[in-house]
Image 1 (cartoon, rainbow, N blue to C red):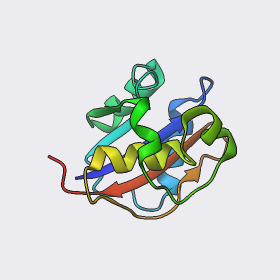
Image 2 (image 1 turned 45 degrees about the vertical axis):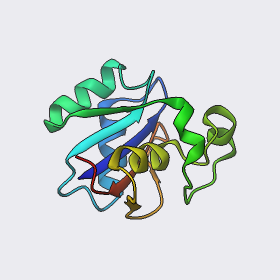
Image 3 (image 1 turned 90 degrees about the vertical axis):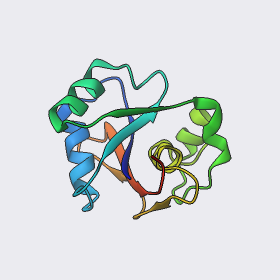
Length: 122
């Protein structure tokens, strides 16, 4: 399983999300997209997932602080209890033992972040 985890602002567009995914340089073979509960129901995120033809995985916010991430964003830490929302949701969605392919990246409009994790979750 290869998961693209996302964090994004309310003003993000499908283009913002696509740009962040492309910027990872590792979008090939992604099987799922993931974000935190509350964001997973956002129309823009659902539309984005639909354009990719990928299922959405939703991660409970109370699990985010349990995951060790590579990036450190003070804003993300303050809001979500983790240094990177996109890295945390990608790792949690990909399952135990999942690994990040690299640091999270930020879309060119600064509206979305994306990180890729690979794991054995079904």
